[in-house]
Image (tube, rainbow, N blue to C red):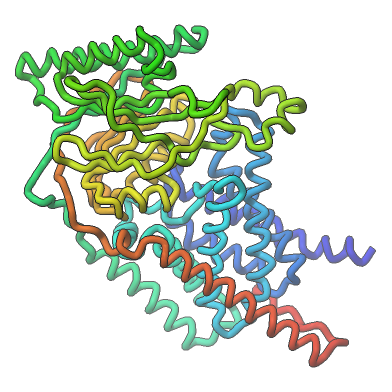
Length: 516
């Protein structure tokens, strides 16, 4: 009975935390209300103040599950059960955050530990299980805001820390028990962060050299074709769009590109083994007389395996450099515990062969310019982006296929993530998608071109070749490691203080200090 009463007392906090989670989910595309972060985080912290660790876990889980349900409803394309499973799995990480934060809020340095703990939670969700799902980082929502420019200096993790800190500062200002001096300092620091970020201006100048690239979005056919017919149609769409581009070049209405970029899955049939697919690519390459970066699914390296690749197809030498996607999507491109799960979940048979991860970054020197190739969801993973940025990439390329999620918020969210990567690395990003969104993003995150969805689109851009590295690129993963470590240390100190309080007075639990 006492447990039911305790749960009843906790229920209002859970309801408010769920509302805060929904609010935080609205900061991202397609809703795009980024400054709700200044309401959602303080509200969440208020629900955690004065609760036990068990209560904090429950409140935090409610917040996290609601957060993900609002952020990634597009997973329902795979299945409603998949949406719920993902939201629950990721939401539990925020349950752990809630349990630790409920005690960390009692520590005198809580204003430092809490945003560090937030970064640690983002690090965890982006790392485990199966390589994680780093889609819910606060930084992704701020590509259009002045504060987003800070990513060039502190990276994505550092920007998430600053945004979480702003939420903490708002909470400190509004917190009933905060001293006037703390409120004043919090207000001044918050205004200073926002004000100074507005003064940042990011350079887009190159090293004096430019390259001209063509992004080809050939579009995909409607549903209803069997696999082989659909796959061949997609390839022919990209071939025909490339042939049309060459006609425009010959007519003088378009600039001749140095490189043509086809998207991920521009051919799902291995061009090394299928004569018709190979001929379609050759036809396009011989027409434009420049290399085409082809997005192809290839067979191998092992039996019943495949790889998602980018292949540089040269008009003189044929297929050459090849990059294989390093971070395939679990339960989308491969099935963890395949033999154990397939007998029970028949839907997984639709995935087909396992996608084997590639080895090594997508560094591609092509005709005097070094490109860094990223394939679809890979751009959300820090290590993959860092490897190409530190590896000398002067221009970034994203080959992607969002056709499955067309008409949902996923393509817009991915485009926003891509813009933040441009800011972080200080590189132009060239995006080629089968059905949208394709485009060109300048090194300061501004958009030069953005295609529609489910249309054919060919865009030719002359972009700067850049060598200078941003501070964020130089620092690499250190900000994330340091901030996460500080968060863990802060939580440990808070738990140690909690233990000491219990030891000093084992019969009297510490009185809660709820906010009103």
